[in-house]
Image (cartoon, rainbow, N blue to C red; front, side):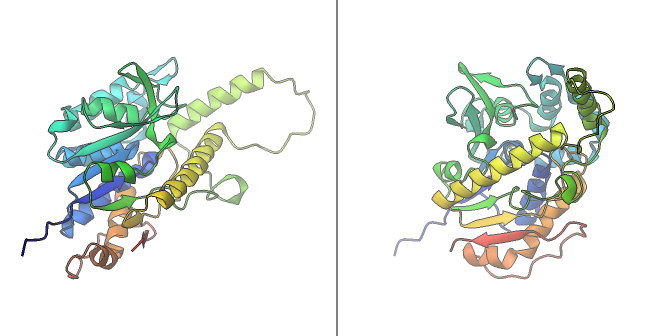
Length: 323
């Protein structure tokens, strides 16, 4: 009898801005349990973490994000026309990732971006690793678009926040998808709870400047009754992104369901809370360790006892299976 070929395991890392640090915890916990993906796909922040993992550079990236604070983020932001140019940030990332042709990486890897003018989904599977990451994370309103091969590209989360289809196209027989947007719509918005985005120096400066500009152009009469305070600009932007990505993710998963969906509990993290890496990574670790029996069952792996998970202040994550 011919020996049965071992199925290739893929992992699809979804978009989610600062919540994407939890991908690091997910990958760490999976490897600790002996579950090692052969194929990697990513969108937006998932493309960044996926690029580091596929190139064997996850450790230096993790060390960097664990020590980052908001003043460091501010220093990396080089504001120009159209948003943040991203050159300083990419130089910092380049020191950790080390640019290389995607086709030469130890693991097959692909990133998703969006063609700004056609709305077409673009799969970046060849060429510069750093350019692919930069295009995939180009969130409109924050990062400026990236020009690649005569096309202007923006964040891949606009068309495919959880790239399961790309993962299968790269050769994965079974796919673990990490969804960062499962529990965020309607949480922590306006008067229903804490603000979507926690206060921090960068957002305070940007929001104050924008609000001042809008007030200077208003014709509200003095002495009139103050209207109810509207959600801030970043609240609105984050809420819109959350709604869009949640709805697109649901539709895409219905058409091409993965074998397992892992959903770390990250509702308390705002769009730009990049300085909360330790707790975000811990949430990813906790989600995997909580659902190891499910993962082993679906992936036909031995049901060995999982390692004890590191302490975490995050709420346990959720997981689902389509088998």
